[in-house]
Image 1 (cartoon, helix red, strand yellow):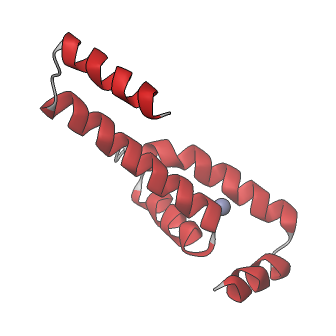
Image 2 (cartoon, helix red, strand yellow; image 1 turned 120 degrees about the vertical axis):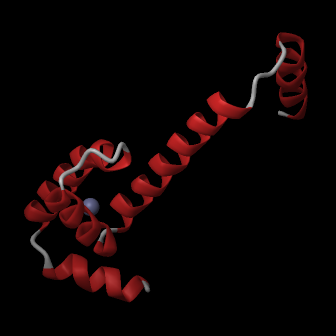
Length: 93
Ligand SMILES: [Zn+2]
């Protein structure tokens, strides 16, 4: 796996790779919100197949978005419980 990415990296000119990543990072929000055009979406998907760092930031962003949405919808924690949990977390640190 590592070899493959090294080869890709060596074959691609660094400047254009950076420009692509920059474009993809701008598309990321649109893609996550489902607001990207199909052209952008395609470009995005194609890029993250080859680019580990953009793929990872996409995964993180998706996870984050999922957690935030799920949290707002499902969990309403009483203030006292929230304090208790925070205290527990601080104890373990
Ligand atoms: Zn990238």
